[in-house]
Length: 285
Ligand code: G4P
Image (cartoon, rainbow, N blue to C red; front, side, top):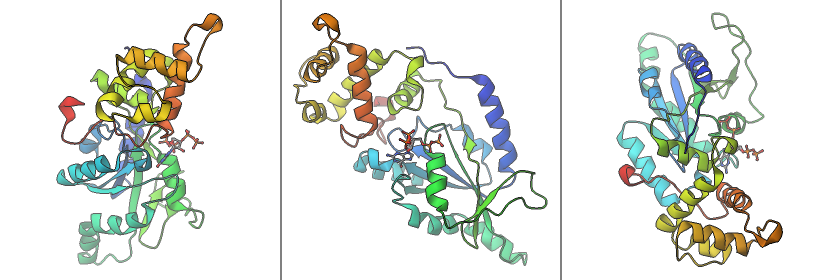
């Protein structure tokens, strides 16, 4: 499967990110809880050196709760602060305020020693496309928060959202670019909908997903489609096509339509809460 990305966008995004990083104390990095490693770009660790770091396992509502916990522990063991969130419903938001204070306690202490009082923590949201950055900013900032407008000494045009007297958030998120060196990373990102469907072969992708689901979440397909999971991924795809009446003219099975249906269901959480890469088993994923 050949997945393309656009280097021009990457370069621009990286430059913008480097500029914005100069303005902030804390990076709030969103990852997709269903694919926590594939939806990260490890370059951020280098770019964000000397910054406080908070990882949000976003779309936690769609991911397997056991894996959410396992990934939380995994990232904590690497020294990150971690919160599980569902940016759509707002679940997990309350906790973030406290964790931000905790993550920035060294900076707060440093300011205090230098006699600087009440300088708010400045944070930015970062993540690869479609991970939920805009949704998160809207939900987290809520309607009650006023934009503070441009500040003297700060790059023109930057808007800060005042979350409370202690925290300000840059209103435009930092866009990270996915790391595609490993084909599987591209495949997982495509499954969760972070790469446009039209640049890859959707049937091949569906076969990959079906095989994965049968192995890691046995019974989930059976429950959703009322089919038997016996047989090859292709046989399963055919069984779903028949169960859902995905036929072309002349009774021929419509694989493309069936694949689209499976992805709509999967991405909408209708096949269950599923995590495509498991903590501690990276090599087997
Ligand atoms: P981005 O800024 O990082 O590019 O992502 P964006 O906020 O646009 O979110 C991408 C999609 O992910 C949106 O769905 C959004 O609703 C969904 N989303 C974001 N956070 C969560 C979450 O925590 N849980 C769930 N279940 N979904 C989340 P969409 O289909 O593109 O749009 P829409 O259907 O919401 O209009």
